[in-house]
Length: 466
Image (cartoon, rainbow, N blue to C red; front, top):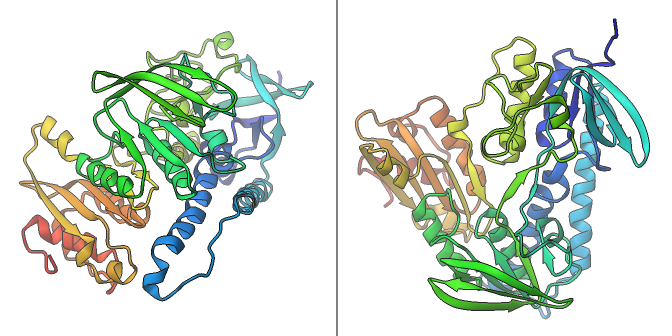
């Protein structure tokens, strides 16, 4: 009888994988984590969430110094931005966070194995680390390999002129012009970064709106704000062909049914992401996929192969780091016989522009599609003292509640720090809260969270400061 080296081996060290490793180790499992990259943390830490937020923060400071500081009595003789220093700070943030994850692996006695894993059978993988190979055996394997940017068939990534988000966080200097294909969170965030640094940015979107998935009212106001900031939007625009040279790209297609042409120094393709499990050998062990080409799992994250599980971007659901983390915790707890659970109806979405957009639950349009009787409360941050004092009064809170029960069905925010404020909404909705529950909750004054309370009061037409 062969004894496996580990009770659990996790393939992929992103937010889902490393969090699952920590929770499984806490629950007493002997765990290994296999990662092909130098750093753990996956796309989120190394090329996505963290570096993009570092750039957003730096460029927001620069933009505020240009546009807002004088109103606060702060003036400069000369204002400059040093992009190499800005990038160095970003890399420092990533490096420090990566060291923190390494510490957590050691603290929880999780073995780190570097290399690319390929299944040999249901209980073993071969790990190739630049030609040095080893076999890792485990009682169970968890696939947490994340996702990669989607390429357009006529516009392949070259890393220089045609780029994905991986390269768009690391330009050595601001390009003169940038075309962004896709008006989702990634395109809007990175478009904002480079517009603040002086790049002419045009966003091309196939749909008649930006920020698909967000409440339409939030998306409409966000587009208006980003347009004022200088980003140009071309909606109902289909890109059909491209001509790429060393120094420019020309896109051809149609805008609202009419032929159009766009030329720029670089193009960022941000049309979405797809699960990454190429080369993993899933076909060899017979792991089944869904019609959408994601790994099929049951309610316990188990594939059709009893020893192989999957979480995060490779299975159904939104491709978000916090969703993958919750998958990882729930998986480990279910494996230990505990009641692990993820409420997929309450996964918040955020676009980290300025202002930020955030939402959880149903949008107004989704409620109408379902034929739900609803009541809506809204409150503008212009009526919030802390927001006005902080020079951050742009935006609003929108609460959608069931007309009979008053249970909150959807919560949508456009504001500075909406990504932080939305957590209160998720907590309220997780416990089946009503707008009345929120309206009767005491909020410190002055805080921007008071806007949430005011929106809750507005559901019944009794906002105090509207």
